[in-house]
Image 1 (cartoon, rainbow, N blue to C red):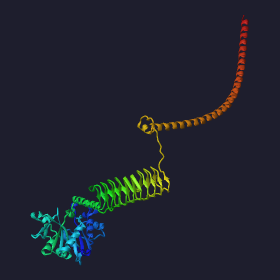
Image 2 (cartoon, rainbow, N blue to C red):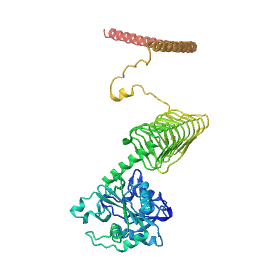
Image 3 (cartoon, rainbow, N blue to C red):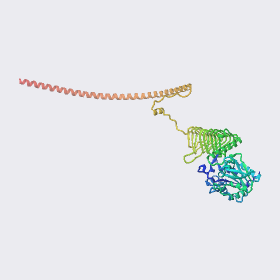
Image 4 (spheres, one colour):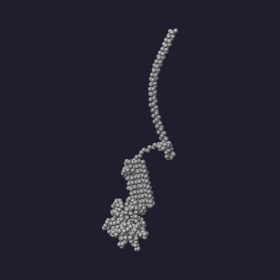
Length: 548
């Protein structure tokens, strides 16, 4: 096969409105297996190493050009007047080019580069002026042949008669023709059809009328020419491409337990002896080394996994991760933009984001690298051999040096030195009977300790002995204290009693003196009363005697 890469130019038509997609995006930017459909077509074209590569764009031209900047030269079709008119927009870019021109379509992403090379081979071997690609399937354009079986012309479905609509061989619209024929054919196009458009298909009829040689390559796999016009076509094309991708990896030594339940993007690379279980999604530009085991229902996005890494089930690697050799990531663990050193592991229920982790590090269940403060993301470092206990939080930015140990339940907001134990958690306090009081019910009896009866008995016996010894010690202290206190009280009592007695004696003497004075006074008063009474009686007697 004669194939000079400098003798071919490629024109990709990608200016269609895509109204049936019902999307705000350009149709050719919708993705199949993680890659825009136009990207697939560009890859096919670039596999031929063309001298010139053009993309004709229309709607959302700026968005399309930005997405594929540097991948091709872009030509604008401001007014969409058919495929022939679209190719005309690229004609000035072909000035001075005398090789072959390949016409492709941005919404037909399943063509294989091998098919395009076969078209080149047929043109070189037969000396044909034009080679067209045909297929049997639901394609609008019908291929009409003459009585000798030679290509006569192409009829679009909307312009075909009932008899022509029954023809099975269809035109895919992919052409390989000389640049000179393309120029001459475009110059002869007219819009005398029901759509009032200029069709590139009419170049085939022009070549036949000019007596030029036209050959056709009939596709064995009609899926290659599947055009995407709506979301259903997009899903169908994606399914076809997934099967191809799965077959390619299995042929290279990868085990897919259930290929139909495994979703691998087009740009993913997978090494031999990898095992991928059902329900896994591997996306973007992910790279898996050799002997990697991806357990069921894992999601891997644009990450790199070195040899013998094990992840899952149900693990999620967000973009930007690098898992080095023999790293283990367990169920319900999420990583984002993180480097995990050789042999490090996180077995379950953890989040590690924006972290540089050394080798042999262990993240316990529920451990979290808190990388977002509500405004910005921050990065943390974990040294070799560090151990992060269960339910621990590392508040980024923070650094754990080699062999640092973080106690379970800790929240670490400062660096932890080498070989240090970091404990950052509140002291436990049990409020007995709190729940019962809250619920307004009696406090429940204390339950016996868990464990065997013998173990419980030994613990109780030891506790009783300990309490007994403590009571004796306390009792001895109390007794000594009481004696000392009693001695002090007795001495103070005696002094107080003596003082009371002295005061009593003084008070008694005073009372006696007072009583004696009162008695003497009373006696004197009584004697005076008696004397007065006696005087009164004597006077009365004298007065009585005198009267007599």
